[in-house]
Image (cartoon, rainbow, N blue to C red):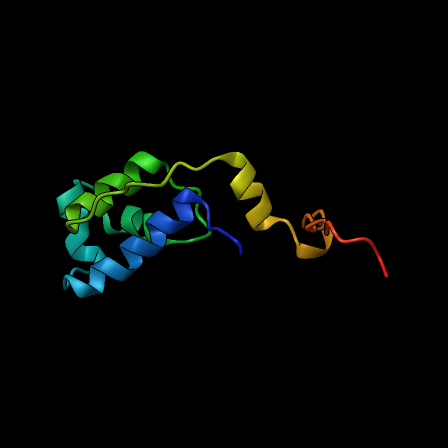
Length: 98
């Protein structure tokens, strides 16, 4: 399983929330006190947007960024390909071989 970055997840949430709330980039700009071009950069997945700007944009469409904080070991196992993971522990049998 691959997890998106926090910023990518926030951008996806914004991208999804805008049409659901009937908000265009032009309508979001005055809510944020900026120009539509700035909103276009926030909405652009290739643009390295500050997380504070993403939080403000999400708030303007009625959303809140609440990224989960997880143990790094769990995340490492989640993104490590199966062929690189250690084999699972096998149960030892108490019976002697035949």
